[in-house]
Image (cartoon, rainbow, N blue to C red):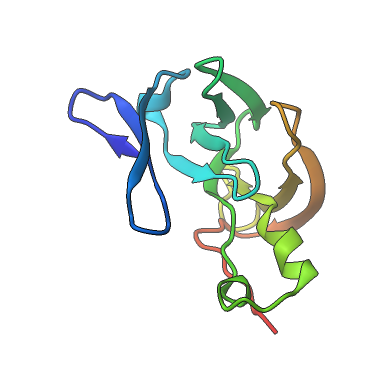
Length: 151
């Protein structure tokens, strides 16, 4: 994601072999210039971004944003797809492959950051379908970073 000084946001994609750029286009979605978090689905290549308490998926075909989740008065502190080292090392492990496709969103209440944290993992369906909750962990503090212990 590239944000210019004129607040226009662009996505540039590169091939992993040869580092050649194969895509460059402006993202014109809802409030994208105000986005706080960006992440890209490793399975579908969908771009997700958050603005305040809202999570959007940007559809490049339609050139518009689709509201995927609104957390109301909660704030989003982390939004990501986790990249596992075991996958990069070409170790075949279905558990890590499946978990790497889950969208992790961590939220908290601004008035109670030490005890209101929630981490949710979502399945991302194809073609702008609604996010499907996979697992939820409550009773956390404000989550500022996520990592996993790999075995």
